[in-house]
Figure (cartoon, rainbow, N blue to C red):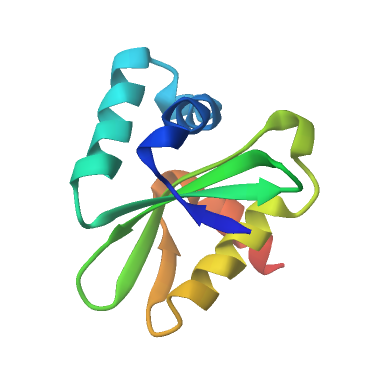
Length: 115
């Protein structure tokens, strides 16, 4: 289940985002979290499985009814279970009138999801 990010989830969110190759640097990671907290066009969601947050997905609202997925990360111990695919589907359900597209780094994952 997708849960909208709140400041109380900051450490969990940073931990999940740090699994992404582009978010390894602490300063970069802090900047990313700050952008999600302050920019109205950036939205961050955590995926809750049982009682744990196991994944995260971050999107940017673009013009022309487009939602661009810019961050997607699943805890390594939960990979291969369809969680990433489930998050993308939940986003499509959450924004039914918008097109969900990946950024360049996530394009390969999206192609894999469509198969």
